[in-house]
Length: 303
Length: 335
Image (cartoon, rainbow over all chains, first blue to last red; front, side, top):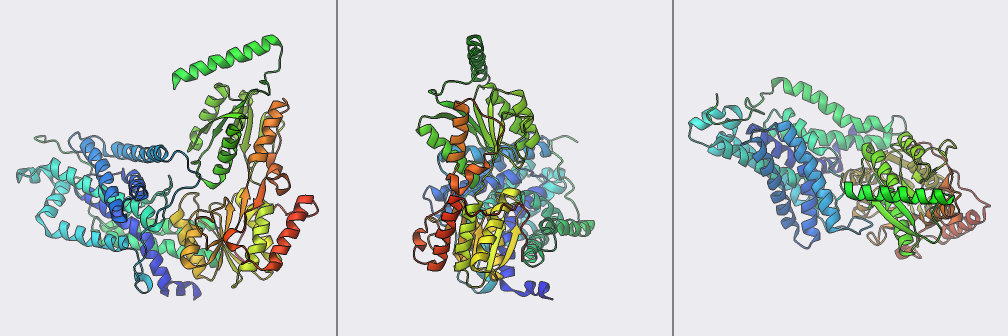
């Protein structure tokens, strides 16, 4: 089967890793937020802010890694805002999240136009280059950082006291309070760090996958990550698997479109990764255990 | 901006009132710059819109128009912004109504004194006499770039990455493939659409897949395709704008769109008081100066002589009307 041979090529797997990288960062970010009990729907906008600030920092003359750091900090700033509204103030996490997405997207557009009022084509930077490794390993350092992020997230959540505390605020905040830890501080911290990772995922698009910033380039990737967290049943390793699976479907449909495109409408191919992800979600989420206190604001002393 | 809105509305009423009293047609005199407003659904950096924006700025520099614009306007907001500009007394409203065809015509019907010149997939309609349409009919130039692409490909495989298969895109791709077949009758095409106008990483991934499947000339309908071509050391053909400066070793030739003749025709019609529902598409034709083949630049002397002769021959024939590039809006498919 020539269509299955595609799966054996190194270039296919290289594409899978490239497509998955921004999703991996943002999925880990969302996972950290949700494990602490906060649903962060600001993810899409925070990715836009990351894509813009990371790119702009490099465009303004900073080195590439400083661009990544800028995106991280910008994402953390929006994460902190999200956290302040949802944790101590206990506002609706859905409304705040969508509000953050609208605010961050608009802020990126506004800042871009303010900084570059008269450009006719989007300016470019020199992005991260793939490392000189064979086959599918020829990825940019940011892709390797994405995998490192998964390892660190998994280790911290599963094996450290901090990770235990983060998981506990997402399950039973009263118990954490009883231990003398601050639920507010833990949740704020988790949302801030998680949002920083989302922004790095956005920055991957402008610093590694491409070299200039477009307003709508995040193009729904943030929403995919929300689904990937559910798919991964709130476990970093499984969420990574989900991101890779989604990327594989996407890389595969692009290649199938070249050979079968004459016979089947292109929309079917574009739909494929989403349809298959929904199917996988249905199967996987049967055994998922949602953090018990997800989306439940915690008010001290209240029962 | 409630304050400015009120003022301009009052001024509009004063102006129209005074003119009506004087028994004059409600067109301003030719000596004044025409007040033009544009409503774009995308940023002005987008290839297609950038050409309109450039032409408008040139007209501002020439003192012919006053120009304001709203970019990144959502289709759901489009009608409101159109009305705001019409209420504010702008005489010509430019834009693109591919996603709001009927709604935009309804707005035009409410402001019969305002001229609307809109990028549209539909023909002009006498029921909306102040609503004229245009599009980038640059198939002439696309055809010529095809002749060059056919001469440059070694593998005979051409990759095409597009946003959506809408008439504007299809027309240019079809003209391009017709050109390729002039110099490479056995060429095969890989056509893919990414379902988005602004996802360069996705366009780039799609281009990578086509290059891996053997394509050695890429038709760069979207941003991102030339980047993939550059990274993999294959060639690209540009569309609407000239990006050779960014990809000197990659972009061989580009089909350029010039909006200036379209805008000029509309301004002349307004000045003469004869603006009506018409299809301004012809002003994008090569014989009207609406499209051209970008200079070969860094590829000067690298394209086979025979192909360049054919290009010169066909260009002359297109300009004198003896050769016409077919307009084919059907969805291109892989072959």
